[in-house]
Image (tube, rainbow, N blue to C red; front, side, top):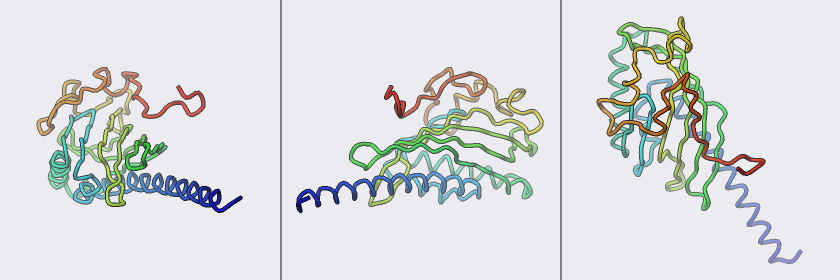
Length: 216
């Protein structure tokens, strides 16, 4: 192996290391997002989004455009949490699971899919209720000044159900079907896959990646 070949091999190895380091940083970003949600640290959540954020999209609430839309949504979350009784505020668990992350060509943007299982206190009916929840993320990330941030966060809520009833009896507690596609504070309704109304619609959330074996 001559010097030119050795330099090429070193460059290839450096690129591979950088690739996997970036994927780990993106996974860390997503997990940190979950922990900040758990602890009602909404200002810290907002700082995880790029100043050039495209959107925050929540199937049960709507689409919030740009960094200001993100700020409006999480500031509203903060105000809602302060309205809850003290004994209700302390339980908000968002477990980020099964992360699948792919870097786009160029290594400056990426996409990721996650499952989120939730154990919550909700006030949907005016009284605190123990609740289970589930959502699937299909997110876009961007690397700015060497740090990974959210560029587009999309979460499809499958269910938020009372502990006593479960998702079979009450898929979305305190909400009707029409509530799922509108929000007073959203910039516009969530319209992707209008058949997607949570469990039990059977809607398959599109994958950002191809089959790893067949390539289809």
